[in-house]
Length: 310
Image 1 (cartoon, rainbow, N blue to C red):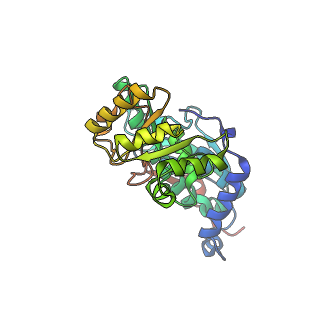
Image 2 (cartoon, one colour):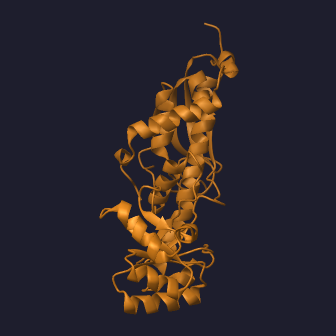
C-alpha cells in the first residue's frame, strides 16, 4: 500500500530523527575527520526480498544532515522488492542481487553520519511491512473480509515507524496508544472487581468518543461485556475451534458487537481463525520480525576524492 508522505506529521519525524542521531553521535564524530566534507554520491541498494517501507524516515535523516535523496521513480513504499528478479535484459536495476533504489548526495561526512541509522530504520520498517503484507495476502487468498491488526507490542521509541509499516503492509494498526481506545484487560478487570464495574468506570471518563474493548476468557465473560456496553469483545487465547464457536454464539445474541480474537495467533495458524463471525484477528507484528537487507555504498567516482587535500 502506497501512503502519502503527509500522513506522517513532520514535527514527529523531526523529533525522532534528532533522538536517533543523538544516540549515534553523542559527542564527536571522529570518522568525519578522516573523510572530510567533499561533495559525494552514494547509492542505496536492496539486497533481499521484501516490501519497501520507511522512505519518509530515511529521507528525513539525510535531509537533517544537509543531503538529498533521489529515489528511482518506481520505488514507492509498498513496492515489493526482488534483487534477484531476472528480466530479458538481466537483473532489474542492479547486478549480482543488488537492486538500485536511490542515490544520496551531500558532504561525505554527513552521508556516513546518517548511513547506519537510515539503513537500520529502513530495514526494520520494511521487515514489518513485509510480514504484514504476507498476512494480508493470506486473508485475501481465503476471501476473509475481516481485519488483521498489529498490537501495541511495539519497540519503545519506535512505535510510529512500526505502526506506519503495518499500514504499508496492508493491515490495521489496532490502537496506536493508550489514548486511542479503552482496552480493559484481565488486570484492569481484577483491579476493578468485575467486568461490569470496569466498563462502568471506563465509560465515566471515556465519554462518547472512545470505543471500549474488553478482554474475555470465556463465553460468559463475553456476554457480560456485551450486556454492559462494550463495543468490542476480545476472545483471548482461545483455540481457533473454541473462538469460532464462541463468536458464532455471540453473533446470534449481540449482532452489533465487534468480535476480536487475539493471543497465540501466528502465521502458521491465523487462517484457522478466519470466520464470518470474527471481525478482527490481532497479533504482534514487530516482535520476532526479520528485517529486509539494504546497503549503502559510496559511488566509485567519489571514492578517490574523499578525504583528499584541496
